[in-house]
Image (cartoon, rainbow, N blue to C red; front, side, top):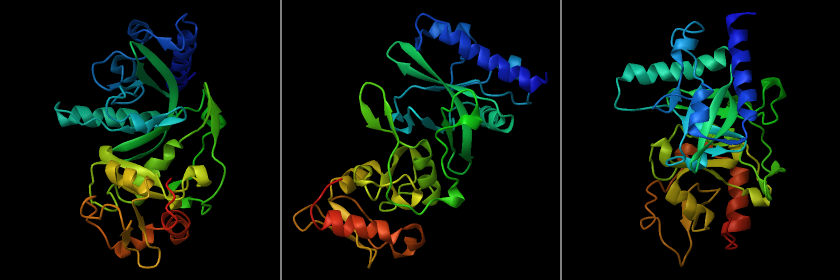
Length: 295
């Protein structure tokens, strides 16, 4: 058995041991530490003492998601994880980023740890894609074998053109629609990490908005998305503004707030035409906005 195979087996053994806990699926912090799944003070746990023989920077074992800042970036299907950027020496942050990437290169899973009250919820995740310029990566909860991934998303260069279609559902306590963990990742890339209508380029402040709402059959294709800051997204879903598919200019409700009041300072979007799907915009504009229908 190779070093990498032994490391994979060790992680699967950690998962099995965690499932034997009487507290499963919500473990105590001490249980998580005793299992070696997480043991650091930062967001990325590498356990370099054990994994440095696999890769020079080590291999990430656990990622802590507190939910305090980016709660909308995690779902039952996966997580959009922001690279660490701290006041520590920059090299340490970059080594942790590389340790996360090493897991993808070596086909090793990473544990995602969520704070649920005083307990920790564990999910085994696989790194699917990353973007160094935007400093984000996307991981999905695929089970113990990545080949059995039921949440496969289309690669960014091969997005489907279908704008309508069914959305996956899962049953927890009630049946609900799932977010595709890749959707925001692909929208961030499509719009270069910048809000289409305000120019804000802080990824933690941005949302992936559906042009054709999911409740009306809109898909998770990046063709059906816009990158908006949180306030612009909320106003968009409330039907306060839309993009005219012919002029590619923002229009607002006659009796509603204008673009200045909503701080939408990019009114003419013609220079961004290559990133906009006219069919989706036309549906939103004529079938929803002009009829006063909200998302």
